Amino acid sequence: MKTLFWSFLMFLIIGGAVAQDFSRQGTVTYKVLYNGKERKDMPLLHVQYAGQSSKVWRDKPTVEQLIPGYAHEATFADYSSKRLIQMAQFDDGDVYHSLLSFDDLPTLELTDETRVIQGYTCKQAKTVINSNQMVIWYTDEAGIQGSPQPHVGYVPGLVLSVVRNGNNETLASEVNIKRKKAKETLLPANLGEVVTKNELGDIKREKMIISTRVFDDEQICWGKENLEVDQPVLDSVYHFAGGTLIVKKVKLPKTPDHYSIFAEINQYSNGDAYDRTGSVFVIPTEREKSFWDGLKGGMEALPVYYDAEGLDYQGVVLTENYEPVVELVRFFTTFGVRHFNDRVKIKDIEWEDHSIYKQDVSDLKPYLEGEVLIGAFIGNYDRGGHKLTLDIKAYPGSFDWKEESGKKYYMQPLFNTCNVMEMGGQRYGTMFKNDSLTVNFTVPEGVKNLKFRYITTGHGGWGGGDEFNPKQNEIFIDGERVFTFTPWRTDCAAYRKYNPVSGNFWNGISSSDLSRSGWCPGTATNPEYVELPDVQAGSHQMKVAIPLGEPAGTSFSAWSISGILIGEYE
Image (cartoon, rainbow, N blue to C red; front, side, top):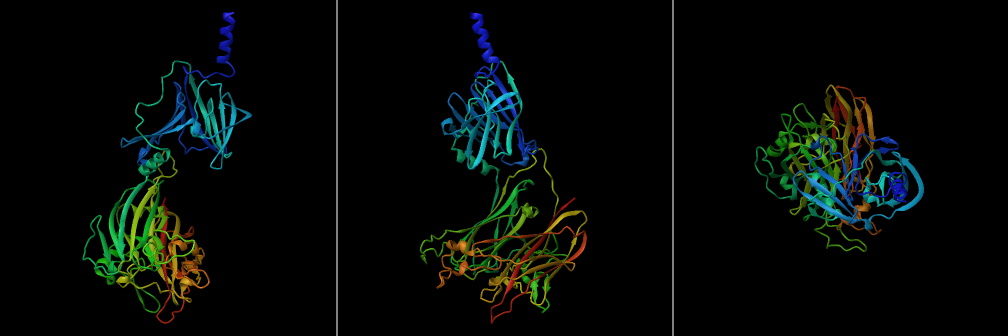
């Protein structure tokens, strides 16, 4: 009788459904598939089980410098206490963890569906997380527990596949189970400081984000005296054009190619009630002359461009020994956000405290590394003016974790008619009347994937001005038209709550609601991109044609345009 009993017990353990045996240990490796094909760019995922606990972790990048502030992460499942422990350990020595009870995991719907994976018959469980359809395949035949995505929900077995929305699958590629005495637990002795799940996410992001504060609540106004300065000193802020233009020399860190770089601007009124043109830019200093020469010595120190009527424009186009400023972000202030919030009350509108302009400037990466001169301009004649904060932030993105691409960039600024030294005598962009802006340039040998980054906004703030009338922009290279575009924003009314002292009309709309030539009060203007596959190495000429509106009395129209060639070296 005893022999039959032990034989039956061994049959239950070895064959068919196997009860959880906490003397076992094992490791499962998972790969990621998208539409049935393995994603080679994704590191492998591993689940280890021992002593009523499991550990989930990914292979870390072989080149760790690809992710500054990289977190060595692992998720532990403690089956005795029925909780998940998510831990992050950083290269600076900081260790944090968050806790989550099994009872707080998503509820799973068990079905009768089965599937064989790695020789194990798996059962199906389903759930929905943030509108994502999740399908879990798990087996109770392995004698161990664990899941590559334990936050999806708890099942009493080993998860061998998790499928999201039918096309993204984390699938077991290797199962290694050992029938020997396991460790007592996989939980580390030092879990570090306990924080909430959201706090842990914030800590990880902040450590991986490369952030540089360029301007910190800096005043841009009219009425400040210009400083006499020869060469800029690192981390010092200089005011020009009566205080309407600020410049700072900063040292920006090198960022890996897979990082996305953003310029983030926080701005509010410090007394000025009007919508104003703003620009954040980099001053190139590689050639004999730079815009810095015009700042310290006056606009007459810059190369002059003449239009068909003989009017002179200072420092706006590329020459053999000069490069114009490189515009990162063109933005437009609102009608008095924050400073005038108590001045006007409108039913159902709560005024915002400040404006935020945030744009991806990754394609200008070569200008955002090392020591660079960064400027910010807001045209105004108010002694309170505006307050501005600027951060340059780099965020990690998807990349080939086995190797870095090592791109070699080609950049060539061609023109910028946004007169950032307006209050220092720089002329408005009116050269388009009966003419076109013309610039000569040379593309070096070996440049590929050439494109043109173009920012354009029309100005002339009365009914017949180009601010309020659509105008076609045309770009020609060597006489051939390569691009035509009419900048026009019709969504300005969406930013009403940023414009407390915008004029309110009898018909129920506000002046800030009106459509404009490529901009709205409270927005940044998106660059347009022109692919140039037919532009080969050698000398070329670009022309920009815009039908400039006629003046009316002392009012006139103007166009602020900036353009830069972008490519890669083979």
